[in-house]
Amino acid sequence: MSGLGKGVMTSSVAKLLQLANQKVSCVKIDPYLNFDAGTMNPVAHGEVFVTEDGGECDMDIGNYERFLNQNIPKNHNITTAQVYSSVIESERKGEYLGACVQIIPHITDEIKNRIRTIAKDENLDFLVVECGGTVGDIESLPFLEALRQMRVEEGPKNVLFVHVTLAPSLDVVGEQKTKPTQHSVQELRRIGIQPDFLAVRCTQPLEEKTKKKIALFTNVTSEDVLSCHDAKTIFEVPQILYDQGILDFIFTKFGKVGMVNASANWDDWNRIAESMVNHKDQKIKIAMVGKYVTLADSYVSVNQALKHAGAKLGKSVIIDWIDSESINDYNQLSDFDGILVPGGFGTRGSEGIIKTANFARENNIPYLGICFGFQLAAIAFGREILKLEDANSTEIKKDAKNPVVDLLPEQKKISDMGGSLRLGGHQITIKPNTISQVIYESNSIKKRHRHRYEINSNYIEEFEKNGMIFSAESDDGKRMEILEIPSHKFYLGVQFHPEFNSRPGFPEKAFLSFIEAASK
Ligand code: GLN
Image 1 (cartoon, rainbow, N blue to C red):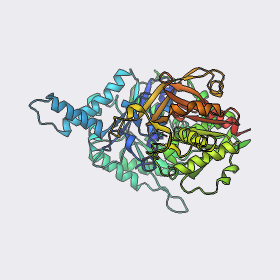
Image 2 (cartoon, protein in one colour):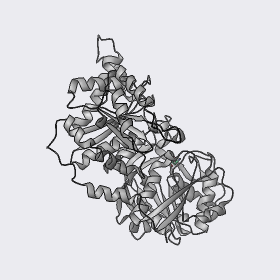
Image 3 (cartoon, rainbow, N blue to C red):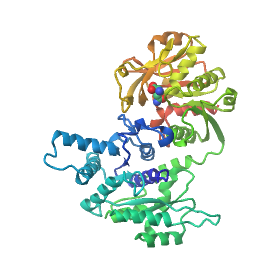
Image 4 (tube, rainbow, N blue to C red):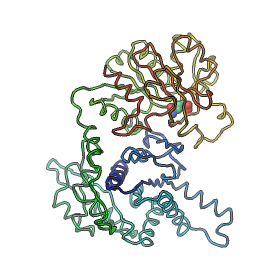
């Protein structure tokens, strides 16, 4: 089921293989009918993760990037819509001329082909494929069938299955229940897949007797039943799995024993994992003000980036989410060391964000505005300092008298909502002698984007005369990328999404500077 930790399991297995010097990557299969995650509500499905090559992907891709510290291309997020679209396209071109096009073999072939292409093109030793959904879902059946076929075609020394299940503890005594695991494995075996390992999610370490019982009912040995109990941080999970011998088991099953050294880079990784939990001396309180605050996963990369920055500085970052729609006493924001406004869309809650940006500026509270938080900070400045009547974004008010933020010109002709924003990595030029240059220690950076609106350049001169500097730009100066107020303790807005580049041990620099400023 969702939320169980398949993403963490996938990332952890991949991390262990990477630590053993294997060339590894991950794939996420999403059996839903959306072409990609771009049009999905982050409150229901979690954040839309943007890849360097402009994919709007499932948030698990972000987990893979953070665990592996490597970019994952967008073709690593496979959805039902993508698979069916290419099969239907081929059918229309006449590529299957004469054949009746069917789920088996045409859809399953396309799935296998996509997985094999990635493994081959990237010259990987291992590809860890996460199949989303729940065993027994109609939607995931073609994918599981394709994976079943793959095991037959590639042989058991080249494909193995890990099944992630749940052992709930129901009563105060905490007896670990095995029934859900028994049933999901039965379901999996009915469709022809016998798992090699069971990764069992539980609150406390799985007891020996529970392991034995699960093994008996699911046709594996009790060593193949792995305890995936709750950890202080998800970055501890590779170690938890390693301690149970998973790496040896994998190499044994793949016939690679003796060919690999599984201890190569443990030190660095464990130092990073430890830094994510052990910071005692100072707590930094950050208010995150936005619209999608009801689900922690809707800003998972922002949360993570804040924690990476805190960990680097040896401080704990405590995040409080505040709904920009219901905030009425802005003085509550004085209790925080910093205010962050993440990305967002639409009218709802936008006035609350504009007031928040104002409050941070007036009260000299460190402020980091990302995308929407960048645009609305400019609007707040326009309204309060420049006294621009009815300053707004045309996203919020179509006929605003002062459209400080307006649609990107190339967006004016676009009507499709899916995949049509300005997406992915774009080169950005930073002006000399600016705060941004100090933060990024460079005049040129590449950052990921996801937006349809931008700062209207007609206003820039007036803004700059009054103390808000646009210190970075892209597309030959056409597009404003960073705003800063040099007289402020820390006031930075970025059109891009720095959170997607932050990795444990390697915090993104805007986040690092923000947390540094917040801790002073
Ligand atoms: N809604 C704004 C835009 O489309 C900001 C997008 C965002 O915050 N990701 O430009």
